Image (tube, rainbow, N blue to C red; front, side, top):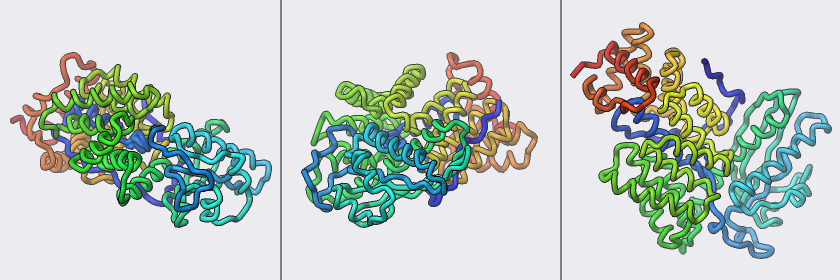
Length: 477
């Protein structure tokens, strides 16, 4: 079965942040997919980081200070936003309903998912068709951010522009342009809203984190935002900065769901990357923090993402899937949760299903920091399906996005090239892989084979990987 390219045709005006570096210890199909699933999960607050980020999702209720009546621009509430009516550029007034529906759905979605202070649609629509400076709108409504855009629809296609603007400075924080083709009108609307929602909320959170970093007297919101972004922007390669930020946030509020969840992820991801010096202790701590987050608020998606990470470490894949699905039920725009599910399904040998999840993540958040890892996952899935040309293509795309991603995609390329008869190219790829990986020979690779309980398809894929790498020049010992 060949997985189609994502149906949304994308033209991005500016590139997103490059995918993070990966410090992967060992190249093995089962461990790699579980490892990257954990990495993909960290962005789910934003996107979700996917953003997660993921995870680019829930900054929970306790983070948001109550609004004063009639604030000045300088006093505009943190995480406050107005979605201005999207302009209809179709040249057909009868298409106003489509642009208005996108505006309404974005307003509802941003309010529900992000728990932002979002200006009501009736107030926002008073600005429809008016050419008013965003700084003035910010002063009038007491908001920090303005989300605006346009849509041009023709039959089953739509071109969408969206931009997030700092209402104080007038600076553009995020811009996106994309085309989408859908026969079903409601599906088209949903895809547009999900794409904009995922990108805008991550950029808004980053902007708030920058404000928090320079706060002279940081409060709980400042500290939690720093914790969130420091973990997500490191994309799993978390270190001292993230640890200190999250500890400060928890010291300020021990029951802060976002800080609890991100702290849990900070402990679990290094285990998945083989960088933990005490995996047993770190896993126990990650589990405790995730459980506390869910106990405080079971309807916060980020807590379930953190718990899913823990379950991946424990190789309890069915339970991990359940938690990531719960996260998606709470936040349907969490692209990183889809990516995590893709990697888990590679790990359990369900390669067609894995590609479906990867495609959902890519379509939802094409500028996500985890994009290189989703591409890498698709390469693994296509290798499992014995579609070697596709495996090579997606692995190469992964490296093109992030040349520092590590040895994993090169392993896919080397094995797939060798098994498809491209011997010289395979040997070159294997040489480059060996430079980056601690796994230097077949014996070392066999030592980290999937467990006997693994699905037969996983073991068969692993055996073919060994065969391919042997043909590519990997020595026996």
